[in-house]
Length: 371
Image (cartoon, rainbow, N blue to C red; front, side, top):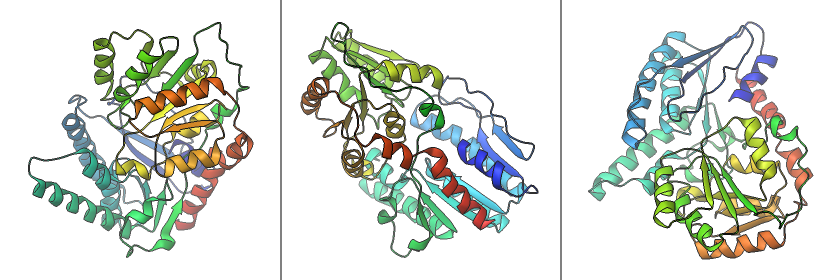
């Protein structure tokens, strides 16, 4: 969204204002710098109470944001609303603002909430599970039907929804590689056996990543390897507890860090790690992390399946893929990655195809068309 804002700021007519309704960062402790735009971009950050990092705490905090943003959005009466759906209720929020303003609507689908709900949450009574799922799915479809354009981050998302939703309104714009990751020399260093080889994971440490099911086992079997985990999330305490219980000392967990510092960690790492839980919701996703990793031309060890597995096979000749949550298979692939460290022969075409600037031009053209 930050990149899209810069594009729109450059190409939209001068008399068009851009308003961003977001929140003060509350999920993680990491500070974020203010971003400067021209005088026509207004960024409104709503403060929300800290109810803790549990699911219900985050839900309560989001409800406060939802109400504040809804009233402010209705007051603005915009001509076009763009809503991202990493959380479904942001799509609903954007749709409600669009309806009350009689404005055009773009829904940006980054996650399918109903499917994630089905795989990750369960009530005591299965009837209640089904009822809540059907309500969420109905609302998702209603938001998408209302949209003038649906931008999906993965080409598999539209297959999930009802065929009654017009296919011509779907536009696939994947995540991409930010310019900052391409401004450095990423020549692949040869593996130095005089030092401990290193495996790096950088990103959210949540239940979805299930690092506690893989990392402790890999670290215990490979004491000669240094594992570095950078991030925060609801699964971090579970991972830390598992490492402590198993008396594992070759795993270092660090807090999120600024991009410039993170880039240095990528350059120093020998292997980049990625893992997603074995659930149907993750058969269709395409995490943004893979584009970040891809800029560094390092071997990638990935526990993924479905579309993500196909994407890695098509774009990375140095990807070592194992089935999610299978730690023994992960260990075999890790040893292969250490032995056969090589560059990605598709690197140049990958960089060209998934440059963020290239993708954002496509996105901004869609916005300008609707304006």
